[in-house]
Image (cartoon, rainbow, N blue to C red; front, side, top):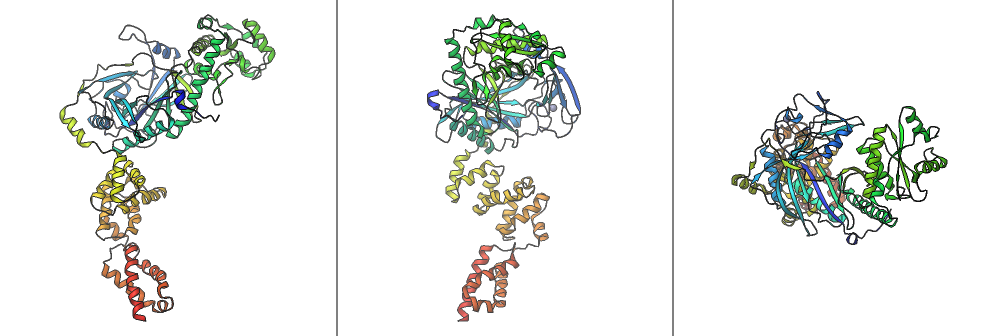
Amino acid sequence: MSLEIDYKSVGLKVGLEIHQQLKSERKLFCFCKPKLVKKEPEIIIKRFMRPTLSETGEIDPTMLKEFKKRKLIIYEAYLEENCLYEIDEVPPYEVDREALKSALIIAKLFNTQIPDVVIVSRKQYLDGSVPTGFQRTMIIGLNGYLEISSGKKIGIEQICLEEDAARKIRESEKEIVFRVDRLGIPLVEITTAADLNTPEEVLDAALRIGALLRSTGVAMRGLGTIRQDINISIKTGNRVEIKGVQRPEWFKKIIDNEIIRQMNLIKIKNILIERKVLKEDIASQKPKEITDLFRNTKANFIIKSIKKGAKVYALVLPGFSGLLGTEVQPNKRFGKEFAERVRVIVGLKGIIHTDELPAYGITQEEKDKLFDVMNARRNLDCIVFVVGNEEKCLEALEEVKERAKQALDGVPMETRRANEDGTTSFERPLGTAARLYPDTDTPPVVIDRDLLKYIEEKIPEYPWILAKKYSKELNIEEGLIYNILLSERNRLFEKAIKMNIDPKLVVNTLTQTVKYLRRDGFNIDEIPDEKFLEVFMALKDGKMSKEAIPEVLKKLSENKDLNIDDILTELGITGLSEADLRKIIIDVIERNIKLITERRERAFGPLMGDVMKIVRGKADGKIVSKILSEILKEKLKNLE
Ligand SMILES: [Zn+2]
């Protein structure tokens, strides 16, 4: 589907929600290391969700829905790496100050207002990913803004510091397995206003937010350390949240597909209104068992299930003829929205509807009979049926009814998951009431003056502004510097520049050299900044040439504790004084008088080669070339 979308006329509004793990020595509410563990789990805990009365004396309907799934929740943990907090057996410990400071720096960078007192709140989490059933979170900044590269200011609604949830290992119909190593890793959540109006702006904002987070040096790096969700709406549509957009390159496709989806859902709504379908007509439909109709069917999957005791139940969707077969996203028909909802909420594999029949071995004859049995109108209604045990079938058809009623509103508010092909799938209805309530286990955290002063001093300059400044000062391409400023070596770069090390050499080493050494499998990222600085100093002091940098870095990547002087000795690198270098060059020239008389200036190339063979790693090629051409010129004069 290649369709030119006029984002302005559809009234596109997009907001971003970015989750970034923070570096710290400990987890947010306990003292375990904030790290994923790479070994088999040592403790297995099994639990069931159980509904209890809420503070307002009611049973939460969402909770009840989760309880109905009767899914076994399994937590995997470790003896040494986890404590009782992660499995909800002890109350939380005090908030990690380091993570709090990092989050406050981020809150300042996004120009938000920081509260005087931070309250720990509970955010309901019912999918099992947090054993307590809620995530502990703190609002640490409100009402800020960020200027994106087009110059537009976008609102930052709020910034939260919270604990990461456990990671899902696998899920089946009967059970879901989480590992608690990720639970409690400090996380900042940045929520922008829905101020972004084109996919380009969304990409721009996401890249800027990512860059800003990286430039602080407090953000964790690597796969899974940053996660982005987007919410999308169009003029006549509704707010839809899309989770798990793994790469910024996905944004445009996902946004375009969601716009198309919302437009198609609105079209379907208008058709239903034209056909005078009412929500009550849908609500009053009764499911009917139709197992007998399929006792002799050629549809294998139905026969197999019936033999195992399954039943078949059907429901009429009045006025829905042809609609479930309509494509709403590329290669995804409207019927799929029903099927996904049934799969996620009830746990049945899917639904079958008459728009897609005859198919799967179900004949036209059976389809006709179905319409008769259900008393449905052939060119006006659609019949949906499901296969499974009675209870699940009835639950599933209840969800089908629910989704069909929503079709009359157009776009349902819901959370969807991003797929790799740019489409999305149903995940759950969008949370209704406020899910935040105060945590009774933790004291409030006071943001005092000393803490604020400390934060103010730590706030870095925006990387895009710094890149401009350095680019001008050092006469080096802005993009190169910007990349370094977003890398883990940003502080090293600034220190090296302050120490008057040749900026081009620093940039080259931190981009080219590091890149190809990493590609060749050297543990270059393990070398601490200080060692890089020592290498630069050795170079500045004439102890080595720049040609020797890769060799020295290779040695350091094998053992980062090595002393630079020892490495130079081991590699046989001793800096040459200019006098020594001159002597070597004169030697080479004297040995090649014949060549010089024959070739004159053109002897330079071979001579240079000979000298470099002797001094490689000990003298800079540029200096060699300069001295050689000087001495050669003089020699040629003398030979005349
Ligand atoms: Zn712990």
